[in-house]
Image 1: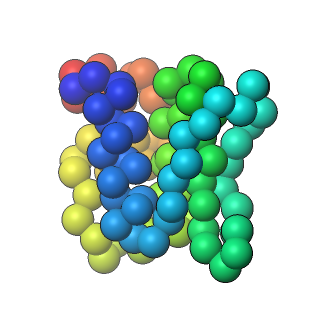
Image 2: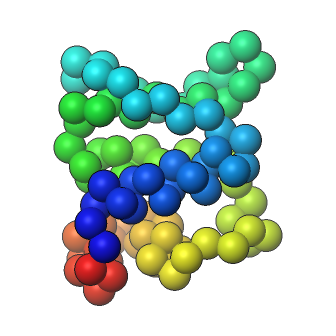
Length: 97
C-alpha cells in the first residue's frame, strides 16, 4: 500500500474518533495535535516528509483513540507497536507493501 493511502486511512480513523485533521502547508513547522475551540485538531504539514506525517498520525491515534476498543487494520497495529518499541517505520512498512 502506498504511503499516501496509509495517511488517508489513518486520517479516516482519527476523524471517525473525533479528531479533526487539517493538512496545510506549514512551511516546516512541526504541526501536531492541539485543542482548538474545544475540539481535538491534528495539524499536518502537507510539505513534511511522509514518515513525519505518518508519525504524527500515529502519535495522535495513541493519544486520542482507545486502540484496544476500535478495529484497526493489522498494518496500523504493527506501526503502533513498532513506534512503542522504538522500531523504525520502514522496517515494519516493508512487510505491508
